[in-house]
Image (cartoon, helix red, strand yellow):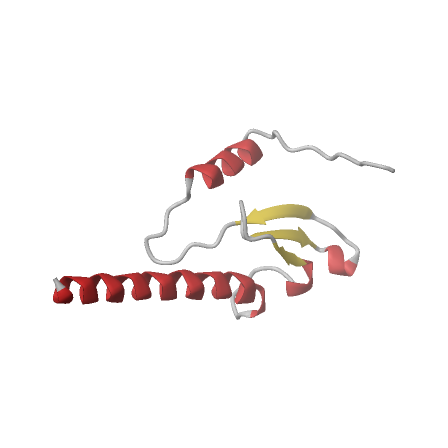
Length: 100
């Protein structure tokens, strides 16, 4: 029983470290080499997508708005992430301006 408990704890710690590493890397991604956008144009959301990029906004020449989901290894989209992806692909994206 003790050996089984230790194995479970090691597995839980490893999973927790992987999640923490993933969350940190999502926030640092815009500042790493190879990120295809100006880091000044990226905003971290975390959920349901990791980043929203206002491509060109820092230069006041907005080209497009891009929702970015970061996955590492064999990571797959969650059902909620797929819903967002599909809404964007289907053009079900709108602008709403609220005034008070």
